[in-house]
Image (cartoon, rainbow, N blue to C red; front, side, top):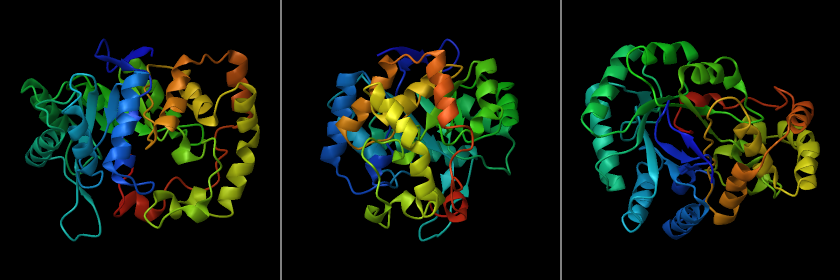
Length: 330
């Protein structure tokens, strides 16, 4: 698989990574055996960049990864996150970017992963009560101590990134980005390219909307994020599926799955993007990884833009509770 750098002149990893949120059951039940089979497939495919977080299943995702890499060391480069706080029994989350809290959570993540160091550590969500310069200094300290190889931020604004970069070079920024979620094009993609910061799109296949097998919201479990998400409920879901028909036909004409084509589109965007599709199965991971071997022409990109223009998706990205409440996505 082709390689891309994490940060300017930084560590190189496969152009397609693996988001491990689904290991914690966010899109349906799974188990450690299935998750480990997916990690084994990742090794075979050259997918060597894993993305997880301390809050995915209250540490479950990190524990599953840790159990696997114990017997398969020195292959994967790992990114994890901290900064989201939920007190026991609380129904809402808060954000804490203090040094004391981040240090404690990082140590717990390292223990669950069974490592002394992670390649990339993100602030999962920004604590607005704390200047980003102060948070950046904390992260730089972790790097100096040898606990992390570099750091980044999830879902921040371009201006905030510039302020952080003025303190210390930032390795990566992570935000939701796909053909049906294109908000990062309003400055973040351009800022990352300008500053030499790697942009890491999560949910690059639209939480399964670009899958080869048609989705049926009636089959979603109550715990599935999509069960109440505006884009997956009617009438929005039917509108979205109708809009995707010509895109799916284009993928079929090229002999690839819609997921492969959707990720290939991301890889063709400016900068060194490293999408991190989340999956629980080896077969779906292969579809995603195949995008790294696919080259889209200018004509292909123009056709995709025509059939799926900016803003085509019906429905908001999150409900209010998904945005501010108990759920943690990405």
